[in-house]
Length: 98
Image 1: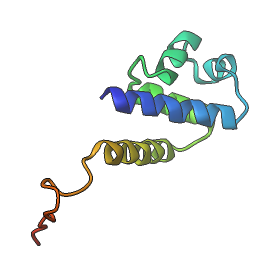
Image 2 (image 1 turned 60 degrees about the vertical axis):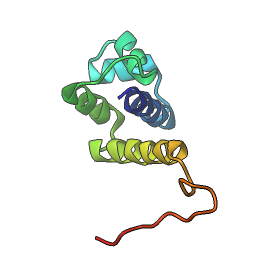
Image 3 (image 1 turned 90 degrees about the vertical axis):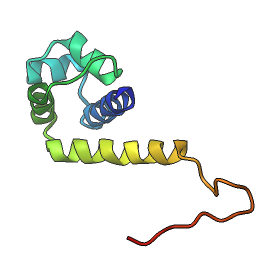
Image 4 (image 1 turned 180 degrees about the vertical axis):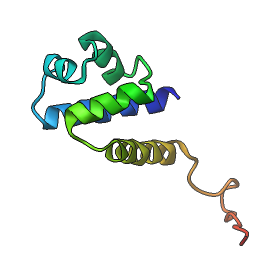
């Protein structure tokens, strides 16, 4: 869950910066405290669905786009932490067909 929180914050920060908004501007537009947005961007706080919708509306970006971007980043991090290669050196893994 911490990884998701961190990556969501990264995506939200990137969207904000792409639009040239400061935390103060986003805070005013989304009606969310500046400190809370900062904590979300740093992965320290969870964003409720309502708060996330408000931030996305203020950023003029679809929620689905934010979640898709986060999902892609999660997949990359999962792949990086997944053991690559056969369990036993020199013996190929067998993949069973479903």
